[in-house]
Length: 511
Image (cartoon, rainbow, N blue to C red; front, side, top):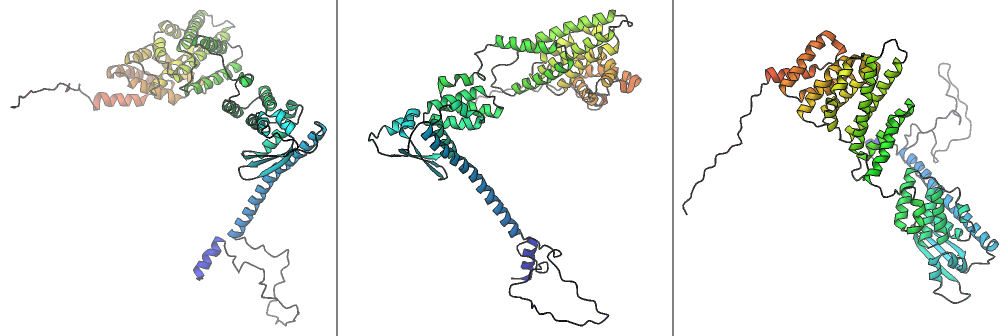
């Protein structure tokens, strides 16, 4: 072997480096005779002999590491096989005890063998009387041989789980199946149910179904339960189990009533923390439904807009009261909290409308709130700034393309509420950490740029003069201003001539 190849194999770990190994070759034995040697004063004495404690450990080769890993895996597989075998042995011992003590039976007259898919076999001596009484499957098979005193041999092949089959046979000898299942997990009982159904062990089926009806399920277990029950087609016997998941035939009216009660309850909740938690929960659940296009039941548009109108009426009443309130009154903070609460409720409903792609009509509805906008302009900013977040919310959705409304509706929205948004912007930023300044500015810019060039000019020139006076207290929509500038003064587009008309000439060809 070439030296370069040997060097490469040493680097890869297949061959130990002889210069690093301290173990001597079996063919090289050292003499046990001690020979004394003389050294000159200038020469150094030999190094002390290395003992087991000072000797360095040789480095492992890759082959040795792979061998150790394979050995560990083999041990793990062996251990995993020992556990089921131990449990099976325990079941077989129990089978012998129950057959003699509970049933008063002697040795079995049926040799039952269960074979797994990988060839693992377990044999047990059972009794024809028990099998025939408990299982309609065994009763039919064993009745075909009428001779008395003749031993039977039954083999069940290609079982998914030998242990479950053995335990199911033990259950046939038990006088209280329900008690025996206490403490088992759902997956184990589902396996017992499947085997019981396969051998038509009716008592086992009933006990497993009673267990499943009584215990809670995780979401994963629920899917397994429903899948298995639909697969087994047990019909009437599984009705009790499925009652927790099967809903009654429902109509849209009944569903709307439920959603209306839930959403109204959240909007009117007394505890602010609980209200926020339930808003988050219901929003998440409704968002999950929106991705399920096969979902039959959902909150209706009419229900959501009914609640929006209710919130708008409450806001008008609150602002009317705030306008008439004396600043020295003690209940000023209560009214501020009520306005913020109703505005927050409306923001939540608008979020749901946007997620459900139902918010187009709300843009026009919000743009038509002239009375509310008038009241808004006459009360202190500290009362009203939460209301302007609804305008920002709509502009962000329009800027992202999540709301599609005509140009007139977009311009009407800004005509009614843009001045209020300007005036409240400083308070919005400072009063709530959740307000994203950049996001609002981007949404507002995009919304303005969807308007006609003339409308863009009116809005942006107005913003330009306001921004010069107020600076950071106003939203910075310079990007929209730049785009409008280029459209108006640099990239001027004339009307595109209509080239859709075609001249058609008819020619008569000689025949």
